[in-house]
Amino acid sequence: MAVPTLRNTEAKLQHILRVSARTFAAHGFEGTSMRDISKATEVSLSGLYYYFDSKQRLLYLIQKDTFTFIVERLQERLARSDDPVERLRILVQNHIDYFLSHPNEMKVLSHEEEALEDPFRQEIGTIKRKYFALARKVFEEVVRGRLNPLLDERVAVLSLFGMMNWVYQWHKPGVDPCADELTGMIVGIFLHGVTATDGKFMELPNRVSAEVHSE
Amino acid sequence: MAVPTLRNTEAKLQHILRVSARTFAAHGFEGTSMRDISKATEVSLSGLYYYFDSKQRLLYLIQKDTFTFIVERLQERLARSDDPVERLRILVQNHIDYFLSHPNEMKVLSHEEEALEDPFRQEIGTIKRKYFALARKVFEEVVRGRLNPLLDERVAVLSLFGMMNWVYQWHKPGVDPCADELTGMIVGIFLHGVTATDGKFMELPNRVSAEVHSE
Image 1 (cartoon, helix red, strand yellow):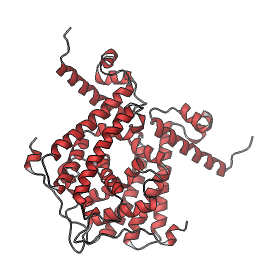
Image 2 (image 1 turned 180 degrees about the vertical axis):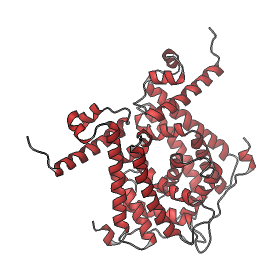
Image 3 (image 1 turned 180 degrees about the horizontal axis):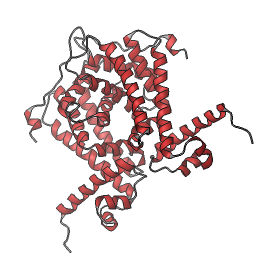
Image 4 (image 1 turned 135 degrees about the horizontal axis):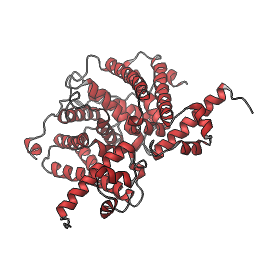
């Protein structure tokens, strides 16, 4: 029997994570058993236990692998530019590129967030906070001195994440703009939306007439 | 044995739909059995079958009830205003109000979209298209003559849905702005983002330097 090399085991783990993400995306974490994972990956149950000892750890590995990849690639890409608008574009492009090519991972991240238990959940929480802090820094640099003072910064950054994270729900390749064009549009809407143009901000329409509220 | 009145059966159905949404949100559609629904709702299996003959029909009823309520309430509210900005605000407020108070339904709608089979899926698709068409009409009225020509309309409207639909994932009552303030911010970001200010549009940053792409 061949002894698995490091390269082989890493490739096999990547295969398992990718196929498992597809299976969780299709049937939900609770609707999927280790036996289903074994069948889908064509790896025996004992083979799977070589990599992780529970379905919880498998879910953790998928989430960790995904976020770590996104954060590390973002850090590398950001290191290449000092221009705040380009850095915002890099953030959005990095996110959209990944999730348009990994819709299953996106589903598992957003749908199975609460399925993960401690201590796994806390660990993933730490990576997510790191990602959010990076995004917030890019945001602060690009809006410095021109952010609409009526906006809450956290709401603004999370609205950007909303635009980016929803894309996988509606994007049809071939019909909708490609990731590159889409990135330009989202950056455009967002940046124009939160900053002043020639020193002028959009007023926030904070009131609906009493009549509409009177129900 | 008392004969159930129409009012009683409707109230009971609403109870079943609400509790089932909570159960599906917690354990996923595939991870939940009719027996689990029976236990959670405290309605016997035969009692449940009085209202629907399958888990598929239950999921369909939850989705139909939710979208129908949102669309009908939106139509009523829109009928009260001719002002395009106020109408956009009504759209956003109607959506955010509902999902901040019904996070389980929001989860079931976005996470179990693909679990629904035909003909249920087609029927829900019809209501969703109606909702999207309404939103698109409100959008077209408010941006008429001042939409950034570099933007794709579909991408713009779906980005607004992204901002609204992601709120349930991050909103912390008491920490984050209330639904009313949040509505003002999202409308502000979006409207300012997609329209011209004093005839000027934000340029879309459509290119990242060659160096960033060269990987």
